[in-house]
Length: 457
Image 1 (cartoon, one colour):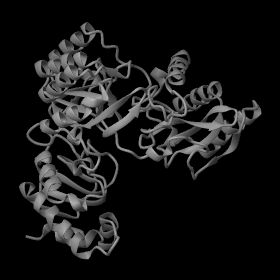
Image 2: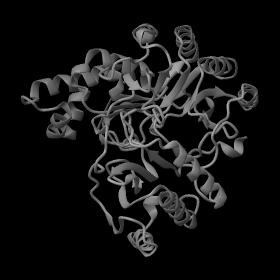
Image 3: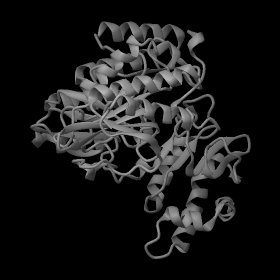
Image 4: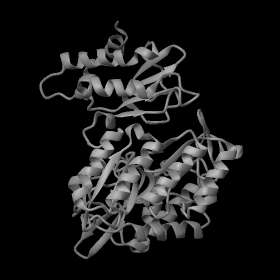
């Protein structure tokens, strides 16, 4: 099992990854969700075999932490006994409301399954790295615009029916557009692009493809006569034409959503993590209210589906009492925090305690992403953040507009990090112009002034 525990690998059920608090496994149910009874059973397994911490990731995967080599095998056996089929191979992801969202342009699941089969038939899975992925986004209330992928397909509507716009290397804002085609061609383009990635080796991604390679791919599309195929890569991506339901493009998966003949309720896990016993308590309550399915949602949330509309407020209230995130405006949604100490042996600071204090005292200025990392690995938020508190030998360092791996601009004791951010928040309130966001004010103040303020007693 240790052969699978290198960082950067995907910690699948059969290949746990070593972390600071033991082994970690990641589950992606093939059905897209779980019944309340199955989630309860899985959480009970997490209590028996792990450290009792369960997570939903930014991409909507379920993680169980704190396993040993022996207990990971026991957990895998119990998942198998429960009949939970988990996805393997190259991730081909669809939205959390796929197939039940009346606002989606097309149900993305059939095309996603055809792409999975085509990838396997082409023998690409062992040739591609563990982080290579595909997104198939049918649009609607909860899009996948915030999820980066090597290849992404976005449904669009034209006068003759549904087409799919194909992008490579990025999220909904940064990806490069290749073509708008029918579903068969979208599948073929996806496989062709992944084949190019595979030829570069298992460490490669679509971002490593050259402009010449992408142009040659687009040129091949033109040669075979695909409708609206573009011979050049378009760097600026505008919203897909004719898209229905675009209003919810950036909506968080928290709150109420109108779905087919019912209402789905999105409930977030604070910082993506929750004790298994609280997940059990919420799932049991949902079961009594008639919930039939609990789906995992990108953005560290769970979507409860099937319960009568009249009981959704009761379920939401129970989740609030248990400490879950039940409002999209909850300040905790703006904070990314890893387990930190004492949960993780690599952590140098108590990230969750710091996060809770900041969320309670400075909610009014949190219109930007604050990252609180127990160490420089930055597991909770690999990309840059407006502000990052990172634990290290010198205490809690403050990094401005960069990742946790960057050199901090200032330090203060780890136990006092929240007070330092309180100083920064006070400076923002004092300096902010009318109508100016806190994020814009931070940019105007600059890293040196922010670091100096953070270190003030």
